[in-house]
Length: 565
Image 1: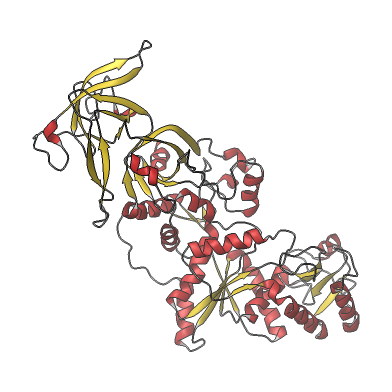
Image 2: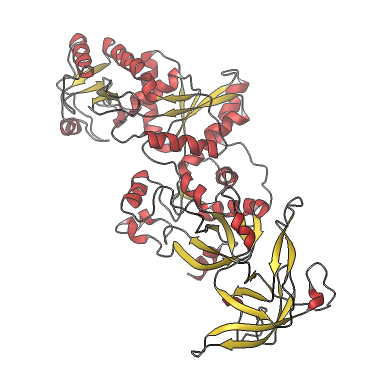
């Protein structure tokens, strides 16, 4: 059963951690003199957008060469022209840079197509590869099972000359898709099913995003991967656990080709609850319009997290805290939310926004109003202050008033006093209702000598409310995003995983009013809407429509719901 990685109990600083198993291997390799420096690579296939699982791999590969002497290459595994697009290449580069990493060399598996073809010829010349005319169904029938050996193809006995001639003709485009493959000649009785004469090349007449129509044969991943590592002299080729059975073929090909001995190491893929990490399933969500696109803020894609307001620092922190393991594990999304809260608390600008406005008239406040001041971030001594207009007409949250309060209700109620954040103490004197009995306005009085920062009233109140001035408030749209799925593992439930989508993963508030400083909000800035959560400006914002996305709530509400359940 996968191990579960939970969020920390509190905001304590990071403890000194021990080396993970990859760091131990590298330190031993460097101390023994096996390598003077290390070379790693991040090798995504450009067939979709990167997600949190990729972020773990990025942080691992680039992080190792920040810790130890060496460098990391960005190499695109572009061996399947049907699913790959330049759009994905550019998005991947943007995501890696946004996470804070720089690669030394930008490489593509397609850079090595000529070299890989020559490697294939070398295997044929050694009698270690042959052209097979079998269909995929025929090959599967001969493959055997984990407990039964496979059987040789009738084409396995072709001569070296015949194999070379057919392979060159495959390259020249003489045969249709699927009619022939090049297979390694290893052992059809091997205990590792992947070693039973695996396919090295297949025919695919398709336009490639970089090489155009030059090639109509393309190497399989297992042939391109290790050889590309070797060409780049990668010392530590780090993969996820599903590639453990592939390591034997990785080593066999390098040995038989007599090329640089790159070495593969595996770690456990990072899964996260309340979401899915499969590119195929994420693509379904996009194409079936369950989400607005790859950058929908509910998606676990890096571009979606960026749009939602997550910071690169918080994602790197999450990857470090979640750690690297040799066994499958599930990271609690609460840990990611903890990391972003911790970072945003330090950098977010404090602002006041009222989501469901209730009007208050301060009957004894005379004059046109005044400008108050409030700190931008109490966690940042250099954060400065901002101006907040105040007047006799303001808005508070409708939920911050109760006509018939309970005994321990400390917000506004008839005859009860509260403090307005960075302003004055007010007291509710009168409740105004419409003909239907709905509360439309509260008439209050204020205590003139209770001004925040200069309070001489001697009055202590337990409740503090956020507010905005009626005269200067601006209208904004709020998009409150939450977890995409309502169950921890939607792929482990019965039926279609999409049946478990959270119907409340997006709520739009169109009635919100904000203090006027948010009219100058910047896309790169992060905000804490006081008592509401952390927010950022959305890309859909225009001159006539200001939109904010909720990154995360101030506290983990899901933990409470889980305890209730």
